[in-house]
Length: 236
Ligand SMILES: *Cc1c(COP(=O)(O)O)cnc(C)c1O
Image (cartoon, rainbow, N blue to C red; front, side, top):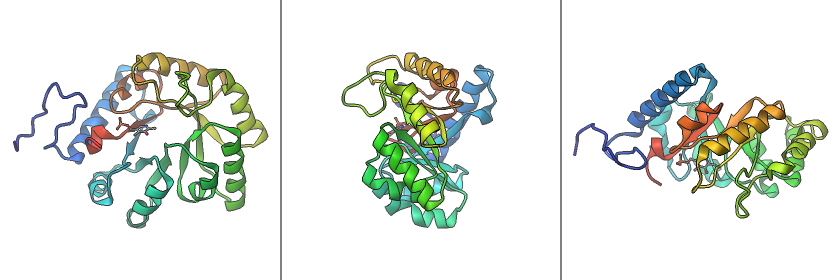
């Protein structure tokens, strides 16, 4: 105990006596190395620090270490935790990465800077209406259910082109790119490659993919946002 050495063989690469700031630094180094290995600029990959379930006390040091983009998966949890942190750091960006109900569209548009989980017409229309009403523009991602898992959110791959067209052409939504969460029991690289190809076909430049266990592979396949939680904040 007290040693700063990393415990090897730990599945998440997280050792509990390291601080979140130590782990943030390591994740940033790993992102830079993965970008370099893929012949990409490190600046082309942005880290979303996923702070869901962690309270303001746990988040504050990570903000003070320079991290500016955070991800939350519930509107209400974010509204409870973030106002004081945001007041102290007005340049923070908050991304909604969890499923959204259309009755929360108003709050989500008012509170977040980006939403990664647009996946059905009702939500797309509710977000479009709220952005117009509130005169706010959020960065939006369409979630694709690349594994076609029945229990998982996201538009089916075969419906993605029509759904993106609806969002972009009819509703005039600023769709930046595509997002996926690969099935837990499958090789993530296959899903990242698939999502990257789909985004190219749809002429979308953003790719929100890669979590603690697989962000380096996601970067190799072109991720522009990686969403990393436990590798920074520890086990939830
Ligand atoms: C929780 C979550 C993450 C982060 O997962 P970790 O494995 O803790 O890095 C990323 N994306 C989404 C959509 C999540 O819900």
